[in-house]
Image 1 (cartoon, helix red, strand yellow):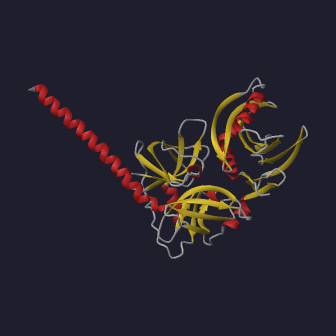
Image 2 (cartoon, rainbow, N blue to C red):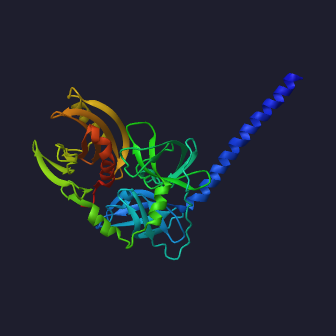
Image 3 (tube, helix red, strand yellow):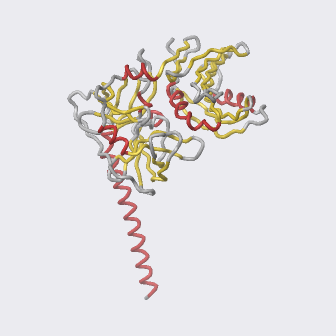
Length: 383
């Protein structure tokens, strides 16, 4: 009799657990359907109409105002948002936000169409709370991921207060994606991935968004005006690429072993700073088309010649819409400990290497700028 009762109790427990799982899954599906119409993919362009980068965002009201990251739009001359239903709208102007907050409030010309906004939470989420992210990672529009709040912390990459660490996966292109709780409220905005680790993703708390909404610019500014202030564009027509770089960085051209290197030097951080963080772009031309895997391996073999080199990580990605290899390593150079982030990509018989270099103790500070420059690098096959 006791065994019989035990089996009944056990069956009831299992059924209860399964019903909760089923309910949770059904609830998640329902939430995704509910929030999808509020999410937008964002595509930005330079003053010649060439594509710069893609990001994510969301409507906050039915007037067509959109929240995204500042770094998504800061070098854009114009931008378009695309909805889940397939409608595309022009961004009219920036109503608020700043580089420091890495948040932007945009006014979008929705014409006479009807849109709905996401509610924004005024409370701090709990560690362990389940979250949902929807956005445009690697231009895979309206992708959904879920996870939990892993921590609330300060990081060097964001100087405007605490950020929220999440386990929901994000990628380049996810910038501006809403991080939502299970009630469909925005609790944070995805903005940064730490590539040195495993699934270390960060988002700006919703309170910063509320601050931006409550403190709009007295005079809205067009994207064209923003791009003229913050970023400049360098174009190399002979090697078919262009790159956006911060307006306070210095462009330089070097001739190294009969090879032209286009470089961009950051200003020094202080009078005692003797190293200028930088981006270098090298283009190598071969007699026949080159494969990415071969090109990457050739360069790895050359780097192994340095006795003090330490390989810190590598991953696959997309730059300018084409597959790329990204390698992070450190070594000493001229008495300084430096960290390098190299991006390899190929186009026909040309190989491209983007090398971001920073002092190792400053690398995490500059990494977001490097990421933005990589996002904005473009190969141009229309010359």
